[in-house]
Amino acid sequence: MLTPFQLGKPATESQNAGIIESDVDRRIAEIRAAALARQPLKPLMMEIMRAWEFEHFSYAITTVGHPNRDSRSFVWTTLPWEWVTEYDQNAYVEIDPRITLTWGRSAPLVWDSADLKQDSKLCAFFARAAHYGIRSGVTVSFGDPAYARIGVAISSPISPVTAVRRREIDSRLGDFMMFSARFHDLFVANYVDGNKLGPLGDVQLSPRERECLALAARGMTSAEIGIKLGIAERTANFHFTNIVGKLGAVNRNEAIAMGVARGIIRVDN
Image (cartoon, rainbow, N blue to C red; front, side, top):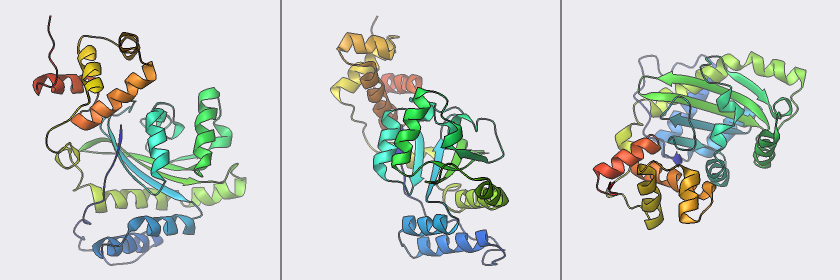
């Protein structure tokens, strides 16, 4: 499940802060100043992306190394929330090459949708992504002691990517990697944790969500639950996405354990 979060107060500056030595230093200083002044950051971030000849910026944290439809992720993005909702409902996280091609990868991934349409699922994914101006870009994936995986995606509506543009992008990869890491350290490294992003107060699952969770606790798959309840397997998966998000669980199994522990469901013989 994808959950939006608000960026926190910028981290305390280091002893070298304020020294502008590069374009990245200047951009990070601009973002920090805007955040301290409580100005909206998305317009500024889009301005920075366009100065670098891109369009949108997305930052995400996942709770597992290989995210899937049941895992929980937190995202801050300049993209319309309609795309994030569609992405979540269709479990694009399981086929998105920006994710699948960066498992265990430290180097940034430069991608172009014109080179990646290998099957019908990917073609459908890129067709919808293109509707939101996501046709090529750079993805930076890295780890952090507190989180399983962190990803930064810089996207562009340009595709195919010419050899000239590719060389220009390659020449800026160091800046993109540094910007991604600096953004993480500035806003998220000391801000996002399980307590601040977890559910607040009593968890309220709908009657249908309780039914799905109870049946899963008895060992049923989404397909079996769909047959049992007379709903589509995709609908059952959508309910589990909501359940995992509401409980603040890592995956379906943890949601079941939390549901039993909190008395939300009972598992009878």
